[in-house]
Length: 136
Image (cartoon, rainbow, N blue to C red):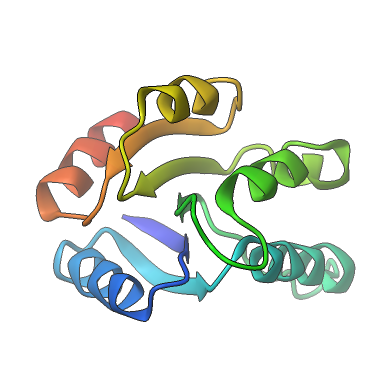
């Protein structure tokens, strides 16, 4: 079981479904959500700039990322998250979870070293079982 997961999606129903499936599957102890890439980057900046050695803020081990969102979409998030500014988080794995399975998007996702998979919404218990094996 993972300690913490971050789900980045602008759709509240998708976020609610993700939480329910993750909880039911005992996949993670804690689920954090962001409604777009910018909100997620702000979350990581909070960890980065407020962490102290006495009481470190925990960080997610896995991110479920939607691609099409207002404010900042998934591709823009990945560009920032892959930069040296966020290199201290480079052990966090990302699963693109999207409603469109465009072969070009799948190929594009392979250029980001942190992306471990590209899956179709909605999230399911069988998907999480598959990911458990992949994350070992």
